[in-house]
Length: 113
Length: 109
Image (tube, rainbow over all chains, first blue to last red; front, top):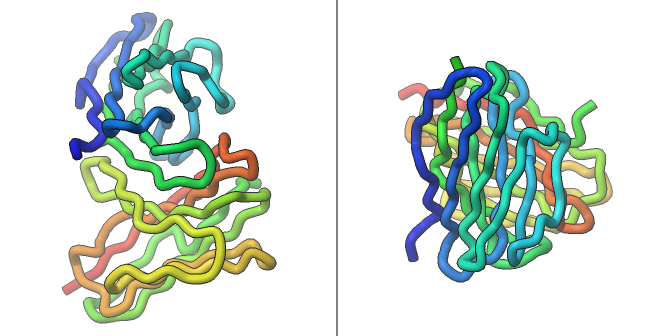
């Protein structure tokens, strides 16, 4: 089975721009969750989607949004980029809601200049 | 205070040593995860447990629900074990995720 695929791997954007990141889950997984990782804050939960519905959201401003398509692929969008948005963005898929192992992608490293 | 606390933050060990990383949590959980992250970013899920103990090769994870504490042990450590180990908790509803700040492990040959 192919793993979780995130694109692109690296991205450089300018303050004020917007960015869209993509995540393709493991085949058959309907849950996709997104995380931000920075040296200062560590891993932080952004949101989770299951069957195209957002199930939960972490404590991030509305500039961070996401969606999930019928094939379970998910996109995350950050608008009006700030320098502090520079981070590694990871997504993970799991086979079901509730206690189940998380399968992570390799992440997208976003640099905002 | 973070919902999940890990210790130590950094750990250096000689090859062959027995290593323990600790994790305490303050929220109700449905599962506790141990994750491994190598330089470059990719995260691998090592264990998911809600009670007792699990073993995979040289790695052992335990959890004490009453004390809200979990440990990850590495026996006969090897330089390839060098990585960041992250403790994570799935909240009671299964919808929320809490992460420790990670333990950076370096195993010296």
